Image (cartoon, helix red, strand yellow):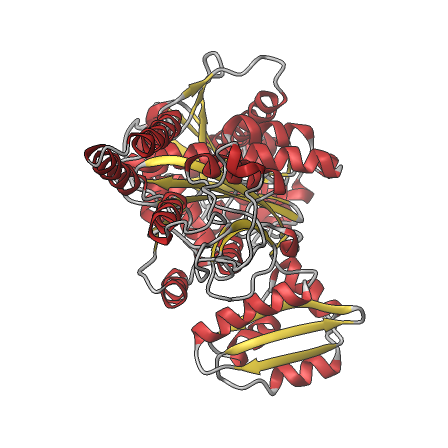
Length: 601
């Protein structure tokens, strides 16, 4: 791969310090990244296979710039800022990031306002968002103003001149702080309630409203007590509508990523007080990046380090490589501890729901953009029915072949974009299992296959297909866990009825005409054919070796040469003297003698 001389010289001269590097093309920036050591990161692009995305960057780059920073955390933040500003082609970035709306509460004013904004300047106000669309933001605004009727007008209050209340006051959407002598403390309570509510502290809001209602009733302020009672009813009804409940009472953001070619999608389920109170999804320009960990890192860096206030915990899988660094950065920005972690066993069902929805929304986005045609329909159907986070462009399948425990073998076949890639097929002779034990044999083959991919630095499959049922699937999952490859999607297909078994315990029966089912059947049958042919070949060789043992005067070296060349007794018997003479270690005389022994008549 040819690299521009100017770029090459700058890579060689990069310092061994943290910082941000920026590849520039003829029409702007191509890619922006950050590194603990600029020298090590940039040199790695030349000394190893950088992948298709970075290969394109190096191909088209005409210049390289880098900025040295004092720390890795500072480089991470600078990277996010530069990506937002320059929108490089090959970076993961929020689509139309500048257009996402926020809700702004001007807490610095005597009578704070709430209104939509896209202005993210730090003026002491509290921002909530970003929202995926203006419609989603307006819906939230309408809802919270019913509960906490803050003003949206632009008046500077309190005002010396008389201001007549607007229509919002008369329909109950504003408390009317423009009225002369309106108590500041009463208005401030509504502001505090709104901030707490949008922050997910609903239990605290309910408790405070109950206390205020009782206090108003005790003072015989029945109109005020009735107003607070209505607020309480509205809050409880809203919470009652949130039927999805998560273990624990904390505040979490559950993040799921789905990848499809040059675009990706991030979905956030907002969990507050143990209940799912909202969801947002964002389309990302992935720049050709397919690594979920890298996309997740980029999304969190772009989204949460701008103006979005994260919950105490961000739950996602797989965790980004620099989770600890992101935690430190978020803690510095928010002033509170933020934890990035994988879902617990109790949270898996909610995470899988988020991942399934992310895959569905990505499919819809691809259809709208007209990019769905870039993938075979069977792969898109398979992604949908299995709720996979990405289109399964690489599928691998394993099968076992044996005859009463004799010469057991395993096969792994590879399908790329729905087509067999025979050059990547692999065979395995079972080494660790004695006797007839299909479960353990599958576990051995999966473990050896994934371990080899890991050692060689190759990508794991998007989907691993197991021939069998729940038992075989369980052993395959255990093997993946031992290797540290828990993030691979697995599915098992049973021979009887072609029923699918999923890791979460579900069983799925697809229609006979399902394109996803037909693809899985093709992959399963090809794995079976490959395993059987390998096993049959070994049996033939074993028969030939036994046959050769009965021929006097043949040493081990010549036996192995015949075994490797002919493979079976029938092929050896049909060979001519001239063909035998061509084999290494056999001359015309030796070939003549062997031929005479094989054909005594």
